[in-house]
Image (cartoon, rainbow, N blue to C red; front, side):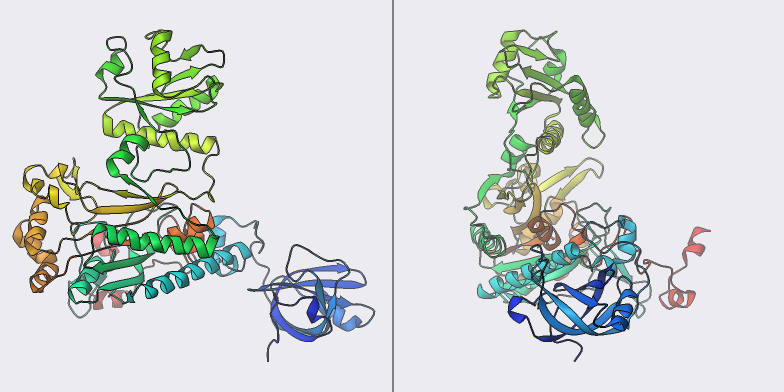
Length: 585
Ligand code: ASP
């Protein structure tokens, strides 16, 4: 037997026991007569003591151990004189009687500690060492627990976990596909699924009634901290349901997860329409950990005094509590922030509601104190507050102001990662106009059903049709989204027409789903959660990378295995592909 105990389980009650432990040398300290070794494994750290007086040879061996050596140690559990309250095994130590080096180690390229000296690139290259760090491993433990709890809940609710294929048909809607060439079908390709959307709908046609899957999805998009080319979804679908049934079911799941993982009793989730979210927060994923809601000000400022406001479709502001003392420099920083291309505003207007009851603004030239007072009242501002205002085209300016709102939330520390605000966004528009392409795109996906009361507008005013689509938002992050689906072939056809597909094109791309609708498709709907994001949120972090065992970097590369990588000419030939060298000339 390699070991009788692990490094996290021995306590005072075990004093006197003979034990065998295995693990990695976290560190060793040589204090003359004594050598201490911290032995680490997945379960914890146990202190091992070697005594020069009782066994000089053994102590000598211990002194030669390097960091990350894999060793086996035999010894007796003893009470420590110098206890360490910070670790669960801190009351005991092992008086070693034997030591075996199972495998030596090179000096690791960074310290295996919670605060490591390794930069991101180095940590990714040696991810197997990075994963030895307690903080990273804990993230995977959390991920595991959440997946188990999800499976328990889903099973209790009668959902079946069913696997869907990873080699599927490439479809033009949605993000870019990763494709896989087919050797047996020269010149043809599979795609890796962006989601199992059509398969789960087919499972409903097949009568499975309630399906779920914790499943990898693939999207060839530009990467950010919260995006990976392959990521995991909790994917779900239900038959004979309306939107309300889906919302209730998954509100229940979230309540279960928060209860078991955080001991938080979630209140009934707030529901906000997409329109309200855009009007009040400039975002379809509003962060409700703080207020700072928008105030529409175009009608509040008097007309004819300031041409910028007169010409702007929308003028809106937020009231930042207690920030009237912001300095010139701070206001300049905010102006620079809103002018960044990612935010895209032309400039920033402010009104300081001074503590002495006077006002100071960047538009003092145009408006008198009474005007400013009226604006301050409309914003609910008190003495000591700062009002920040943007003006321009309505939809774009609201989004910019939403970004400024989040920036102010950050600056004022209003975004505590462990203060969870969970809500549903409902009533999304069905379609979204794309200027560049000159056509409508499905806001969620083309299988989403319009609200029955809006269906008639699909041909006449497609932009006005609302969908039975919903997103779950936690702390400004979209963690999940879904919809009630179209289940009639006719309506699906009309939807494809609205998206600019001819009937032939639609049949070619999506025929297998539309044909299935002719064989008794039940009404159905569902949603999918971003599982990596959910884990990161529960862990209180923004980046999903450390919740995935082997993530890719920002360029979509796995720097550890060095993929992607070129393949041999023989492989290329077999797949009927030209090499990039040939393609270039
Ligand atoms: N398949 C959708 C997605 O990946 C989710 C859904 O509608 O169920 O976003």
